[in-house]
Image: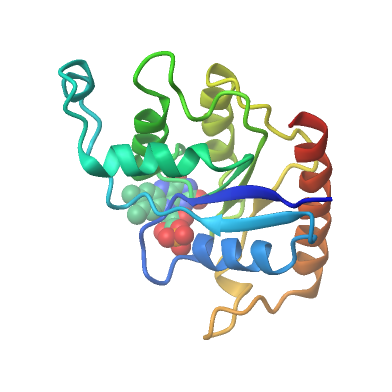
Length: 185
Ligand code: FNR
């Protein structure tokens, strides 16, 4: 079976981001039916509807929209900022959702994993994001839910995942996601 192409979107721009380390760990343990790539969002200009309405979208928006068209699904890996998603992630969602009627998200199966040093694992961000995904017509995997707390203790200095129980969990998560993508493509 040909593998499904999955865009991995990381909600943090930080060099030492725990979410980016988790994204790389998720990619490393994914089944061969998925082919995953990180799509960067930090370069996207802040969304301003005038630029679309006037037919002058920035080149970065156009490139992002074109690139995202090539994917069969999307995996969001996000921190929680003030009980919601970080602004760069919301901006990428908004940029991808327009011009009206040309959203790059619609119909793409998705999944959400939130990662935080805190105890509740970014639950608020995870569910704020899910609220947008309902509107965007992204079929978002329900189970397993993934709120990864205490994340500052999960990686070594080189960014390798050191927790066996977390590795077992994320392997199961990615296996379920592969089934979800196959069922919803
Ligand atoms: C945070 N952080 C945070 N953590 C959390 O669990 N819930 C929250 O609401 C917030 N709010 C918040 C706001 C802002 C502006 C910052 C900068 C940070 C802490 C956050 O989880 C921590 O910095 C993570 O390490 C961010 O993820 P990355 O960058 O490591 O992937």
